[in-house]
Amino acid sequence: MAGEHEPPVRRWTLVTLVTLAAIAVPCAPAAAATPQDEEALIVVRAAPGDNESKRERLREITAGAGLEPVRELPELGAVSVDLPAGTSVGELREEIGADGEIAVEPNIRLEPRLVPADPAYAESDPNAPGGDAYQWNLRRSGFERAWQRSRGGRAKVAVIDTGADLGHPDLGPSVDVAVDHDDSLLHGGAESDEVGHGTHVAGMACGESDNGFGIASAGFGCRMLVYKTDLSISSISESVIEATDRDADVINMSFGGEGSSQTLRNAVNRAYDNGVVLVAAAANDDTDDQGIPASFLQQTGTGPDIDAGIGLVVTAAEYDGSRAWFLPGRGSGISLAAYGAAGEGFRGIFSAWPGPVTEIETIELCGSCRGSFSGDDRFGYLEGTSMATPQVAGAAALIRSKRPKMTADRVIRLLKSHANRSAGYSDTLGWGILNANRSLRWALKKPKKRKKRLVRPLR
Image (cartoon, rainbow, N blue to C red; front, side):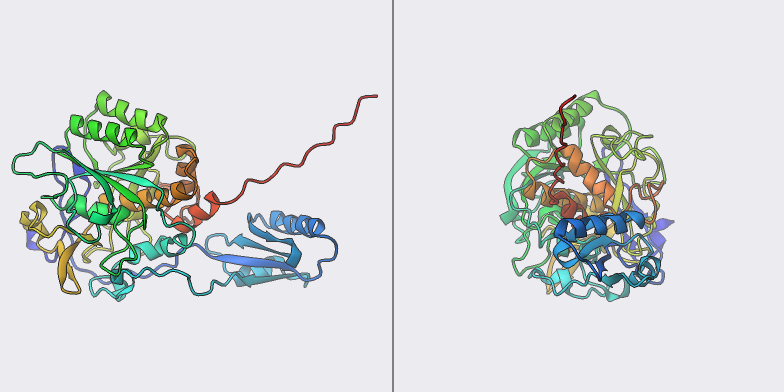
């Protein structure tokens, strides 16, 4: 039986009928993978002429090498470029700098201006692979650098889930409104979370950051709308409607299940029509059917078309950049991945946890969900696509905070097109693993001005 193995681990996408559970067997730590977010500077050593001629020369060089310019510095005869996956600065130097005209150097980054004052962000976790930080997942997704560009403060993220413990120092200050749509017996209001799942998800999406306590969140300073649901179609649909009418920028849905519902489909279509970025969890099973609401956002067969879909369906990767060990949802209904596990035998993704004993903890297989940090036990570990999803929602909030008028379609495309990947679309990770920094950087790029064409009169 699964319950005979130790340590117990949980993976989570909330489902409407059945709660999914899994046990991990201890294994060796996964090998670390370097995030694919490297840049290089290409410099033309002899660059005579005015800035426009230098710019044209730089564009010739980058186009000839199949590279996309990131930042042009014609005054210096230089341009920065993203390195292709698996290519080093040295290899690029050998490829295009052999004639002596061109120099290639690493685009070195100096010490960041911001490292959040949340101790769990940087402190070593004995339960993480290689003793990495408690919140290794945020750094590996480029959030530290993304926060230098956006703190998320002008964006609103609706978290539709099991509520949130608003007495938690990392949650209460970030919540603008909490609404109870949960008719379950013995459950309290939206400011409480008897299950535990919603608190964990909310902490990852928009938990209070840089407050000197506990965790940082993907959305850093985003504001949160908490909708506590009993996971019935009517409860979820009502929450989606209200979040849309409260001008939510992003809606996070870390739940799913089998079946169909025109009511819920209409609710998410309405949200999309009103410009909301919709983010839903893929299944936690080895299936190409992601259930609802995921299939409403990215229909099966549409994933490889980067412009298809009305939202993002998120599957789970683990520490080494591979598909999570428990084999979550795959196939052509996946949009992208984010870190939803550390690896088989590890405890999972670290986030906020309710103070009172939760329903999750009463399940035999989840005795180790609750964790402790600096003597405070209001933290915990969970695994699953549910944990990957709010990181994508937080990244969308960072973009929307800086570009509030950007369309949902554009935000969705940016997050897919600038994810970390070794090739194009894949069956297991969609367009790749979330890269918040790269997506935000491209969101902030100014559109290129088109040169006016000189129209000569007809003779």
